[in-house]
Amino acid sequence: MSWFEHGTSRIFYEEHGSGDPVLLLPGFSGSIEEFAGLRDALVAAGFRVIAADLPGSGRSGPQPRGYTATYYEEDAGAFVALLWHLATAPAHLMGFSDGGEVSLLMAALTPGAARSVVTWGAAGTLSDPDGQLREAMYNVVDNPIPPLQDYRDYLVTTYGEANARTMTRSLVGALGEIIEHGGDISLSKAGDITCPVLLIAGEHDFFAPPALLSQLAGRIHAVKVLVVEGAGHDVHNAQPAWLAQTIRDWLQRH
Image (cartoon, rainbow, N blue to C red):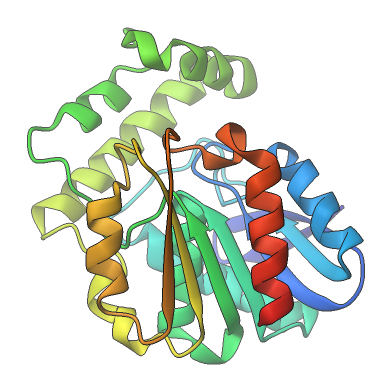
């Protein structure tokens, strides 16, 4: 295990295996521990996996993090710097949810850092016209809606109640500002992505629905879209074996 300092961030990362480099990023509040099975499958297939927690999540700092409307770009810059530090660019960039959004931005802003991109639960833009998603996240610690009860328990167990409340409410403020300015994360920059991209969506993903992925795909030069029937946001939990095999096959072709 290692640490990388960049600006106000202290990034926790681990390296496993050898071969072509793969940067693996979890989502907001997540940890690389969630992807141990995927990491091991990629290592067994002959890849060097650099798995890292996003700033403010897992074991990366600062905690609690104060999120701003520019946090996606800040994180993209931090992970590009990590790849330069490790002398591993270009790498295959891979991420779930916010980790996927950061991967797309890295490829758009610094094409030389990306060999290919694989995302699930990421759509390059935010959409919450009635505010229900933001309201649910804002209240997740103190008054979670039933589908988020397990997530609330995870947040409180992992970060403590006060920190969990601070980080989720700060995130909602940042997302609200992004949405007020059109919701763009990487959509407007997707045409600058020069490497092949695989976009995966759960059929019932309410954060990054297939319709938004279609919009993003229309801006990318070399792209493939896969929709996983019956799955929601966390495709890695709904179809872990399928996801690992699909990603292995993709990486071996690129």
